Amino acid sequence: MRLVLFPLVTLGLYKERGVLLFERDDEGAIFVPESSFEDNWSSRRGGNKAWDACRGGQFDNNHSIWPFYRDGPRIEAFQVVGNWTLRFAKECGLTHSYSGFEVSSNFTAASGRVPVERVAYVEAVEPGTTLV
Image (cartoon, rainbow, N blue to C red):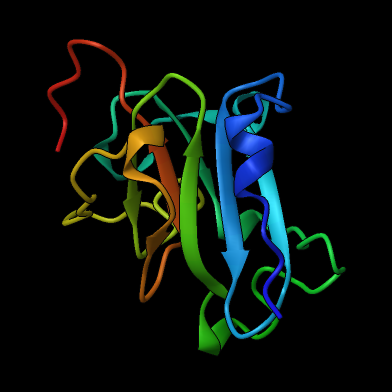
C-alpha cells in the first residue's frame, strides 16, 4: 500500500513552498520546505536556492534518504508544492561541485507526481534565471 499525500497538497495544508520526495520501494515521504534551500555557489549555479540529498535526512517512516552512499538516494518520485518552479539533478550539486553539472527541465505543481530513476538535487528557478 502506498502512502498518498497528494490531497494534502491540493487542500493547501502546506504553509510553505517546497517539494515532496517519495521513497523508492516503500511508503515513506518527506516534505522539504523552501526554508531548507540554501544559496548554491557550487557547480556553477550562480547562487540559486538549492537542496540536496547528500546533506542527509529521513523520510517520515524514519528511513534514511541515502542509507548507503554507493546505492544513491532512495527517491523514486517528486511533487512540487506551491507556486514556484524547480529543476532536479542526479548528483548532489550543492554539497559537491561538478564542472559538467546538468539539471532537468522545469517542473511546477501542475506537473503532478513525477517518477524518476534518481534525484539527489533540487534547485529553485528564479524569474529571469538563465542557468541550465
